[in-house]
Image 1 (cartoon, rainbow, N blue to C red):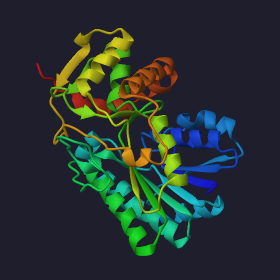
Image 2 (image 1 turned 120 degrees about the vertical axis):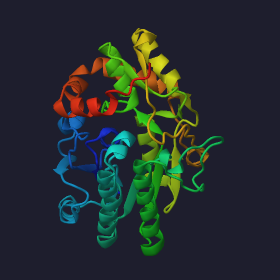
Image 3 (image 1 turned 180 degrees about the vertical axis):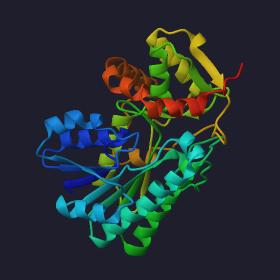
Image 4 (image 1 turned 30 degrees about the vertical axis):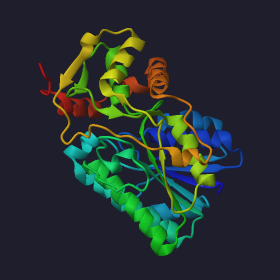
Length: 341
């Protein structure tokens, strides 16, 4: 397992994983395969291209394009697929479910078919805690029933079920990780933490959904990358592993912490009408992956603090995104007129 195809590798978690693997394993080669949608950005990999020119390659392609997927696997002698490619934002899935079905379900099928036909050594699927749905008490275990409640969560659940089916039916060597809310460098600023940090830096109101009492596990992205690495090398074929800090924080507490770290007033908080079908709480039981020898380095609060500092120090990256026409149009559509007085 030395020639990895990281699909969606120009996105947030995928780019961090690519950097992590190339830094850790001197003999590994990584080809990033990415469609470069609005959230895919080659600036996320700028330093990777400079630091690992002989071991890193980029191919622009859609995971729904079976021919290009196979051509890339052949051209780069790929033995392992790690699939980060997905439409990921719940709010966008409510506005436009079609794109999520195409990429997260059909695209996963295309990759699985390629892995099966070309007899790859490994296929790993990046999933999410949202497949379990709202968890009013306790913590979700890998054996719990899935109960997705948004088009995004349903599309990711469908992908997980297809991965498992290919393992059972075709004996494809697969693993799945279900991650909590990842935060950290290079996360597109539609997601809540980078959105709130960058808005606060510009003294723009922070659109907080509902009462802000939704519970989330904010996990630092590099901790997640370490967990994926461990599952790839030591995880049991056919198994699923939850990855998170094992604790949660209310969104309102996250918001207060962001403002405190930036020295900004709480008057910037602007309550807005809640998301349709908004899950109140996610919680992951992470004992299974901890038994492999992994543990999170950062708590939720530490992950938020580290993320805030990165956005403060890397305005060059996020300001062009937020001032762009695509982002501005999305922000207006998503938040205009939703204020709660």
